[in-house]
Length: 178
Image (tube, rainbow, N blue to C red; front, side, top):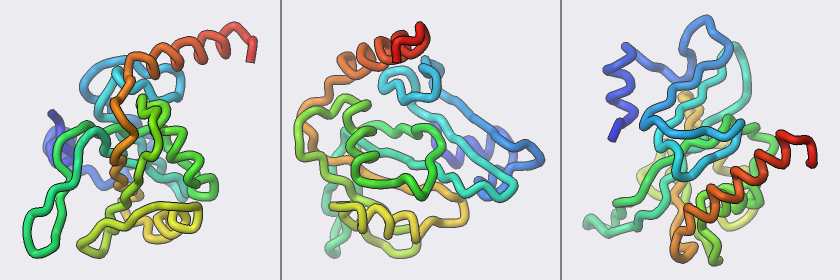
């Protein structure tokens, strides 16, 4: 699996705050499908979006399918699972509804899905229970404009069902029925 640090080694120094003169850069790894600008849960694992030149967008790094384990001294670590980067997001549109939508698109159909935000400047995870927590998560946006969040629970992942729905939604949109 490709890690962010390996991306930097492969493409030279990668600074997600500013990547160069282009206005929009997409790096896609673990080849697969991307349906329009929607999240295709089985299609890809590593997509990094970056906006430059003063854009206020940010990247949401979603860890899911794993679990938290205690590593000692009251500290926890998320292990296992997958990582997805959905499309570039607008900080003003971020809410629990959006997080629920991403969980649904990833195939998590049984509530509750619990969201934990990795604070960029503190050594702990913070639960995201409501829109106020979601806004606090955005207020602590680091310079690299990547917000790391962990999905826990949600029952058994129904990824094939989620992909089938995305294909149907994109087809309906393509032929103009939406």
